[in-house]
Length: 168
Image 1: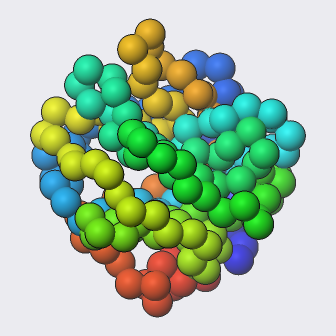
Image 2 (image 1 turned 120 degrees about the vertical axis):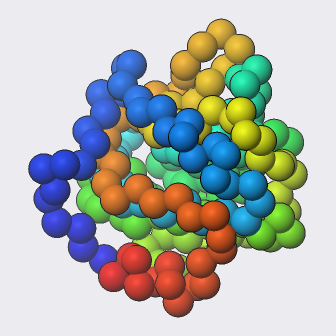
């Protein structure tokens, strides 16, 4: 998988940069696919939010993270699940995706399914959606340092073949 340099990609400093995408909250009510390209430096040693959905009260709904061990994980209020075999924070481009049909959530790295979990959340019209951070009761946190490109949020589950096509 190769992602070419895009002058319109979002470059985050890991300190205070993020993008609110709350406008999708009333468009995504159940099934979801979140897909994007990421280029993250290695060895940050911290957990960084890539795409987050939080309640209006700033509790977690579902958050896609790069964990402190440089691996791709999902957190959904009660549990963590991730790909413990692939370093996605290695200063190269990776295509990451997450799908959920409410029964099974799937994490993909470079078009390959790497982990599954049982989702424990529902979306609400007043959820807070963001890129490169997630909300805690004390405010914005877990800022991402790196580049996000071609972020896509679908109100349906894309097939494994469609995820592979996005990653090619």
